[in-house]
Length: 183
Image 1: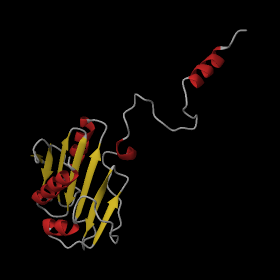
Image 2 (image 1 turned 180 degrees about the vertical axis):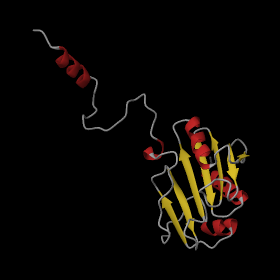
Image 3 (image 1 turned 30 degrees about the vertical axis):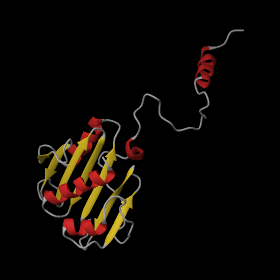
């Protein structure tokens, strides 16, 4: 009995499935894992300004003192492997946004840094020791309010946006988040 080529290919394809269901929506074993549940490099947290969901790695009172504003709301976005945190005050925009990204490669972690603090518009950042990235004060990046500090080490990137003009506040928060998370 002679099998036709399409039948042979179907049998071979099914044999390669092993215990995997035909309904599984998985990627090939050679594909890198999707970062933070497949979020884009430029993903921002989505939180409600009137909520109060404590950040698991930053103390709210410490944030208020460090960023220099009263906190009127706190939100976390668990779409990120390490929940992203936003702290709100009276302005429309968050007073502080903290994003910790676990990426498939060091190059993709640096892509997060380059998105947050574009190299041609920002200054270098190298704190804490072993981390590299960029920083900018308010007004340095068109279309953005406030300052930012973004650094990467290996496949992890930490980005902090503040509605304040001084990047030292964003740096202080990033350093605290890195220390508290043991990164």
